[in-house]
Image: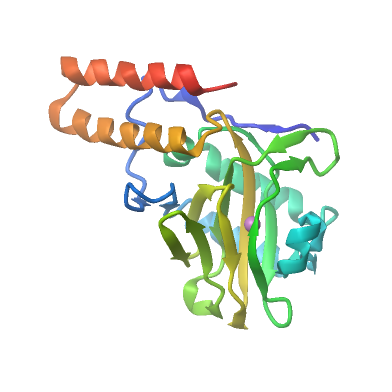
Length: 260
Ligand code: NI
């Protein structure tokens, strides 16, 4: 399997701004690391299809994708590479990501590792504090992807389980995340994070790693903030001369910082 290319990209978003097209965005305060939640990544129909496929899947130990240190902290279950419905689930999630402009501007993805699916329930119910491995091998061993951005897409609603909060730590403290089914959080892979024990019910989610065109999280953050601000300016001022010039600055920063 080759690295999955991102099909929705710059070329589809011409002109580049606005990339934010009415998707709900809650990004945390500007001084925090870039945690972005995106609501309704999946349509109700996609969510229903995914939940049905997941309910018919059998789960394996989550140790398969953890490095030696992370493996000590990891106690959950995961779909094995051989799982029957894994290809369909991966297609479903990647299709949803490919049409999501907010995801694109937040992550600026270059390569996305095929998504993984995990479950926290019963005795396999937590993943202690860890940092995600920097380099991820494709499932077939064909190539490496550098993990710059991590993402978790929720399939269980918060009222379906107790505990299970995803806590992401940055230099300004810890942020707890527990989203409704179909929603996603995107955060820098450089952060330390955990999933607290699920004490009842089950928490099913998809987790993803991707290499960004912009490696540095601070630069990605600035580009994201600028893109969001430009969107607002365009709404209130239209394409005035200063807006056109600032849009040019966005592109020129991206040109300076991006690798493809
Ligand atoms: Ni992790």
